[in-house]
Amino acid sequence: MAKVVLGLSGGVDSSVAAYILKEQGHDVTALFMINWHDTTGVLTGDCPWDNDLMFAKLVAKKLDIPFKTVDLSELYKKRVVDYMFAEYEKGRTPNPDVLCNREIKFDVFLDEAMKLGADFVATGHYCRKEEIEKNGKKIYRLLAGTDKNKDQSYFLCQLNQNQLEKSLFPIGDIEKPEVRRIAHDLKLASADKKDSQGICFVGKVDLPVFLQQKLAPKEGEVIEIPREFYHSVHIPEYTGDDKELERIAQPYFYNKNDGFYTGKHKGAHFYTIGQRKGLNIGGKPLPLFVIATDVDENIIYVGQGKDHPGLYRKGLFIKKDEIHFIREDLRMTVGEEREYLIRHRYRQPLQKGKLYMRHEGLYILFEEKQRGITAGQFCAWYDDDELIGSGVIHK
Image (cartoon, rainbow, N blue to C red; front, side):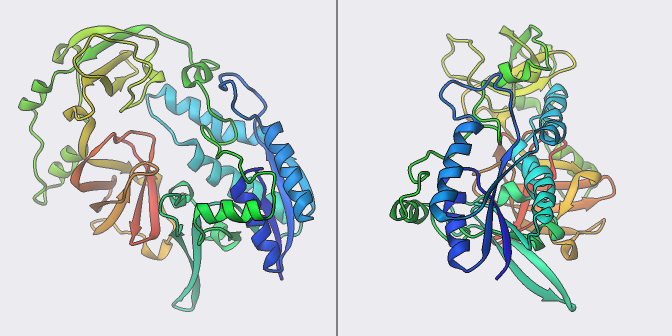
């Protein structure tokens, strides 16, 4: 029997995780994290943390496990929210959920759990952990959840071996409908509670309003790029020349003369590639989508239709200091090339592609063009259902 501190959020997943751990004979303590107090930009009707706290208390009481709270809001603001603001200001689109797991749940929260004498921390993530031995050393594998519709391994793509060693994922081999069924059978308060949405611990937000806490609105031009522009753009096939590799991984670059004025916006840093809502420009045959942002010139470039060629790219690049391997024993060396399955955003089906490690960083080329590759997001690579590593998309 191990002493396990569970991150009990008040949702159904962590609630059932608590039950499973107790059934397995572990000494379970529930620890609720308070990570955010400000409600600026939070949409009406979204459950604030105090509502989650109520559900968590009810679940802990029902399961007869000790319940504690910890306020990590100062560190959450510094490590996650401030980073978000800084990234948006640069015209990049960060993923706060990945950061929250790396910086808070499996770092600061892990430390708090150890203070309580924990052997392990546990969460309600849909993923699995497996232990193997290689050259006499224990290695921990991070595997996709059994429920492919709910797999959350991508959100844990920045974890390391030390964090995995101390982690448990009790519902990783259970499908979501079964989790709901267990919660109903136990009559847990969270059985019918909706899954949380939006920014981790903040909730569903009106992003421009939320970002205006730090980033001031700044009116600029929206430039539409016609499809004909791409007729003159040559992207080479990779034949072994690193200059070709660099060119294929580059995003499209535009200037005002490449298209025509089609409206105004409130600040280029409020928009992200692939975005449709919030442009408020009508009268076009097809909906407009953001295909690029230029925060220096405060220009948004858009294209008509969800299949606009500006939304699709064949490759991406990750700087060498932003490359992370969960499996250190599988870390690539300069000059090495490997085929993996790749995901550059959550819920995206795994895509075939190849990784090229070079002195300056990692180039990733896909078999098929990918929609909505976005700087600031995390790209993760898998070997079958094992997550091997990840990195922040630089461009």
